[in-house]
Length: 480
View 1 (cartoon, one colour):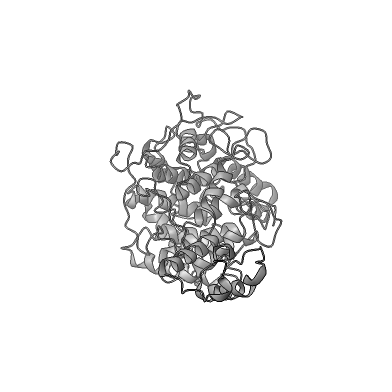
View 2 (spheres, rainbow, N blue to C red):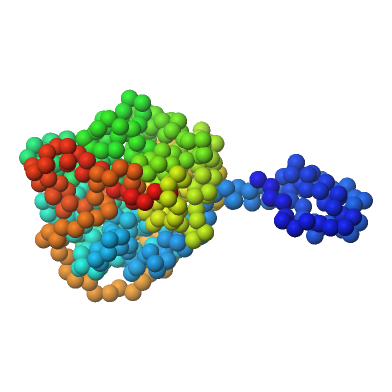
């Protein structure tokens, strides 16, 4: 929208200036009073040049999109990011490993602070510890009986985004661990396996989608066959996906966006392509009048960010919806660069909401996000040109030895870290990446395997009703 200067021109130029602004509004060009000659009251404003019109339109577009620079500054500020990771909100020195990876995804999408991205990757890859001595391997449960396929998939996907080998990351072969985490059948004694093709202790479509993306990007197609088939099976007749596994029959924007990003990595699979098209079409129909999307937190910025990523799989078709969503997100970005959780909730920047709103606003799918191919930040436009096409080409993730396409990014010095303790379960602690029963909270990717083990015990103690509620994905309780 054209903005009129706040100052009021004086003297005999008032009428001419008013006329100039009226004409400027009609043509899309901003003419400032100070730029008019002294005898402006006797002149007829000249028609704007094509280049001037283009510049003004570009400025208008930028004003209607989130500020990637400010958003990145908020995410990496010392008040949020400490030594390459985010902490749990309840204190105690516990790192929020899932949120930390979410932050890395956002930084990879914006490319506004590669040094901070690298520090996060090193914190995980080098098995550095949080304030309680835990490493990322304690969070995933890798190598133990409570290994979470969703959390392992999320970590493996980050390795692939960073251009590192997911088969040698964090001292582990994450792809082999994912293969091992694919369920052959549904479990009856506990909640470890929801169904054949599900991942162990992965009670959400988010977790299933992360595992599928990690396997496909690693070229592990044969072992991903069953997880892909199960993800397809979870799609509702209306094109959406539910939140939880096993399905509760609901329809969720966040989960649908994650599922279509995963299945879009199978361009030669006609059934997968059809599922993607139906899913994206369903997402588009959920857009609210203000450009946002419904989520458990309300008119959610988290859901809006994911919706942009899903819609960008077919950006040509859904350009109008993408533009409207970006304007919504821009309106929910605060002066500190962070984003509110929801337009209809408590105002104030939230780290978890900001990671998804900021990274999602670029339109780059998690399935194709990569520092090795994205050499510059995506343009700030209503239809992100850096977004994947409806049928992206699937490539194995670059290995650590592949240096031909890896960009130069800042690194941090290596520091000695304690040996891997993933084979021994760490003390059970609450984590914001663990499904929780609180409605109206923000979606989080990944789960904590230790908490899932406790949930299995809770099933025996309190019944199926309690465990069903407890498997919900965590979202910050604070509303905007």
